[in-house]
Image (tube, rainbow, N blue to C red; front, side, top):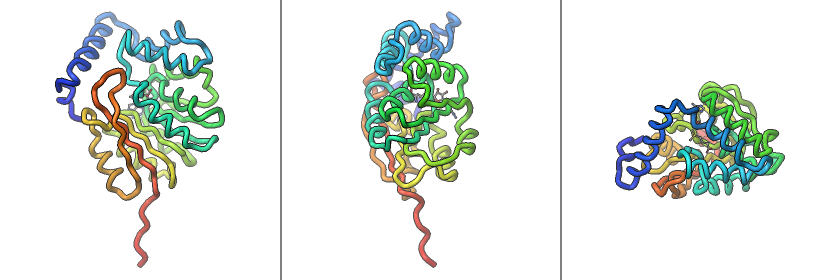
Length: 246
Ligand SMILES: C[S@@+](CC[C@H](N)C(=O)[O-])C[C@H]1O[C@@H](n2cnc3c(N)ncnc32)[C@H](O)[C@@H]1O
């Protein structure tokens, strides 16, 4: 992460706006951002309609408070990957926040797919459950409350897609845990959000691009609900390199 980049001319407006919103909420003693979103969705979204729940969350992010969802610019990249998966795909998401990307993934994959989403913040888990239920997709998504690093070692089986979208300094360590645990196999897709210049998880990028286990592609995008540049890394796992024969 390069915090000074938030003060660059193209990001300064975004930085000041989000700081002001956080300060106003603090001074007012407002509920947490995820709790505000769940309340807004309950009041405004058409129940059982995933597209309308996503549009309602987007409206909140534009008109009320900024949200760190994958959002409508980068979301379609993630959906495109989800649509390549088999019908009974298993997806692992690290970082649920308000359940926005879980809804997007579940809607893109269809009813036989299943998403396990790990989230460390209790309010975010509650909000995600409410919003996914409002979208009518609860059967497809299981939220696990806890830290990724503690939950990953308890998981079993292979995942077809892993979506890394929690704190950026954990991407590399958690991906290595996922590999060690055998949770991905050849052909599994790993998608990482926020790999652009501002967040820049360079240890992660260096690892996936040079460890010999992944074929990587970067897609340019913008930070959700802004025109500040960002990027998404799409990595297809090839498996561990074979040791040379003795
Ligand atoms: C960018 S938001 C996730 C956005 C969500 N994927 C979406 O697009 O709608 C990051 C989330 O990761 C969660 N988080 C951060 N570190 C975590 C960890 N070690 N384990 C689980 N969740 C974590 C935060 O609480 C936050 O809700």
